[in-house]
Image (cartoon, rainbow, N blue to C red):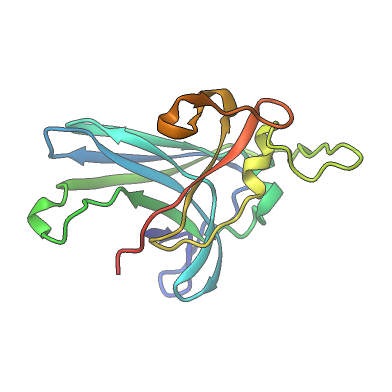
Length: 193
């Protein structure tokens, strides 16, 4: 789900993120166990049910009130998006793995606040490629150039340290990167339809 950053009907436009510092969310988790939530930005809407978003990371909500913070790095955001036209603020929850409503976690959301600096932030050039380099996943900025469709079956994608990954039969081996130390990991999911 996402909250739009602009509306002609309600006469507001907060889509220019050049001065954005962070977004905070106040969640209440009514469950006895942690529930994961992910937050990010919708950078463009390509069709009614299709949009591009920033990379997201799940954060655990403990029982009771939780403040979740999304830090905005305009230089990193500018690699893959027009920071003056951010379409929305994105929320994702892990699947409850049940079709019964009573099995779904009981969560509440209160204040969603966009914190801004007094002035626009300088957008720095973070991209420094080698002569023949396209991507080797060793630089943090590279996670921002990987796009994916936002559907239920879209894979989770993140850059990880290869030696932290167990591979092979029964996970008995350690993955070795072909160059550097990091690799791009895809975790595929089954469609829920």
